[in-house]
Length: 112
Image (tube, rainbow, N blue to C red; front, top):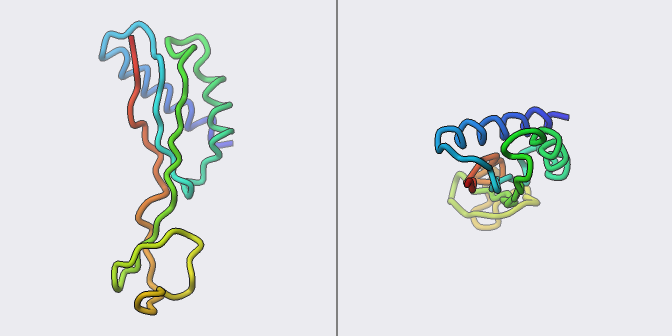
């Protein structure tokens, strides 16, 4: 369950930022999570609920924005969501690059 180590890093980062802002409490964290990031959002929520205990983030809400995967044809630039076809419908190329969907980013946090 690597979500526990991710939640730990998330809370540690938020706590560090809160100390820098001289905050008394972390109210919420907004996370961007790509659908191809290899992270189970519900497992991350559960791990977060464990790690946030006994910190100034104890009552913080974790808001997860799901970022859908998007691919781009490396030949013609055509963009498409998964599932991928073997060949680009625009130019016939089979050269694809993942443009988005692997994000794991603390986008913002609210503190008081």
